[in-house]
Amino acid sequence: MLSKLTIDKAGRIVLPKAMRDELQIQAGDTLELESSEGAITVRPSTGSGQLIRENGLWVYSSGEPLTPEMVEETIRRLRLERDRQNWGMDV
Image (cartoon, rainbow, N blue to C red; front, side, top):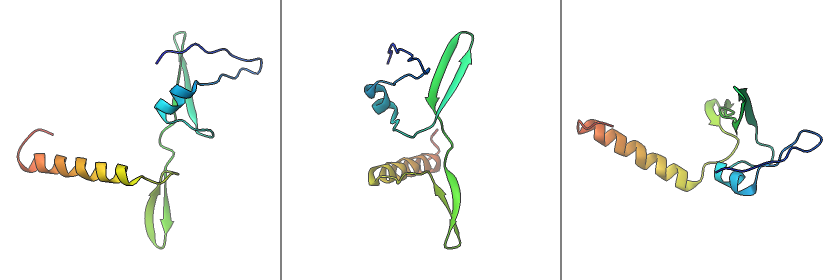
């Protein structure tokens, strides 16, 4: 998606709603900004999850709960990868 943005007097830009929705960016999220050879790249910051100890167990917390659909899709994908490996097929 290509968009033109205007920088205000304070140096701020507003990302269009369609772009925020596409990238699943919400208010309060952290972005990474990189400049190189006359270009600026803005991308969602990754790796913000942390390991926390709950009731004696280490639990990964990404800051937001997983939806049931995300859990089901992950299980389906991992089972398919395992089955393909067991059948001698390339993964």
